[in-house]
Image (cartoon, rainbow, N blue to C red):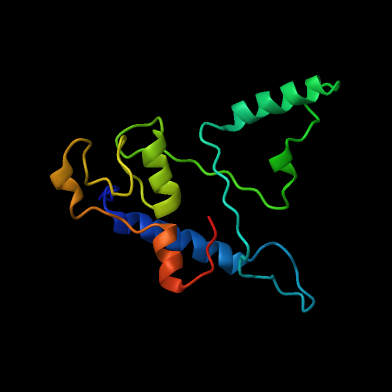
Length: 153
């Protein structure tokens, strides 16, 4: 049976399983006792570069490096010097090419959405307001407020 990817619970289970797998292995850092270190992220800054796929970033890196007189390939963009980086792949439930609002929903709410929708799961269709009434999904902001986490925008 193929799982229903329009169901938000599917995406929550996928995220939970992925996080549990990562936490089971740890960060890759070995602590003093020889055990894997598993820490809690603090002071997280989320930068989202819409449209900044690997090829775009590579082109920007080469161009900037050449502008500075180098070959370009060995240059590092400012964000590439951050101590921790991650790539995320986002795409829509109803399209292979990611549309910005639905991709923002995936990043900030943890569920995949349809193109031209934001803050709702894939049971909602663009220009069908009635379908959105029960489809709203909580976001990082909702979770942070619920947990009373210090949040700065």
